[in-house]
Image 1 (cartoon, rainbow, N blue to C red):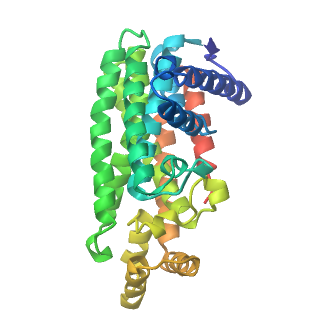
Image 2: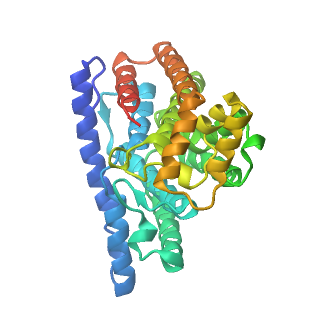
Image 3: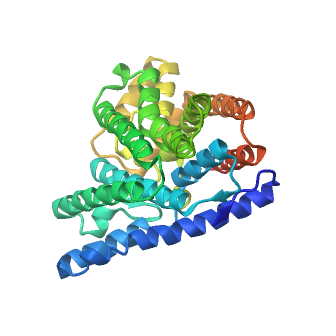
Length: 354
């Protein structure tokens, strides 16, 4: 059983996070064994081997860890029950399902330092189709896992997560639609809306609030966690936008410059376009809309965004959001150990590099 100490130094929290991650991996491995499916067909068994390998790749596991933090903030408990770890594993499976479908929609070649699932399954139309089906399978497994956690409020928290997931789908739809929209018709507000729906609300607000729900947290705590999750999540996504344009794929675990090749209208790009003169705007539009993008055109696109202040503007907003999240966190009426846990998580996320 993972122990969450009520008052503990940072090293103690680091050790607890390491122990939780190890136990989470074991739970994920167990859920992905799927013994009842092993005799269905050899072809299905081979597909499940690829799925299991993909789902168990080393990852940050941000969402299940935030769920554990939400539980600790609500209960003040020193121990994390097995049911919470099971529910957290279900949440991670839900996230993996979304990654699989997102990679197909975005035509992403890599994920978490290796080939995306549709590439593992052969690529092309056949690989896409197989990945979509296996994603559906993960979705069913995730809901089954969360509802089967045995926690008294598992149904309530799962319904909440499903409602948030509908909003996430809206965010993904808007993201895809904006990639086909001329730059002069995309606003910073629209870019932030996508960031809120796709990442902040689903990736940060939802696990924190769901964890607190599972722990019987008060309405006031849930409201505060919604606020800190939104601030953390927007900062995380804007950092991800910088990584998606300027990142090294060896660091990011996915295609460096992938957002450019996919034509994404992310915050740094729109911030640069907003600040550019007429010539700069024309160059940005030509760069983002050209048909045959190359490493050389990516380098030029990066120069344009830097020249017109897109990276600097994004960094400023990230800093503002991070400071706001820390202020919200410091005002939470919750055990200091649980607040320290969330603070350590924030530091880890801030250290991500582009």
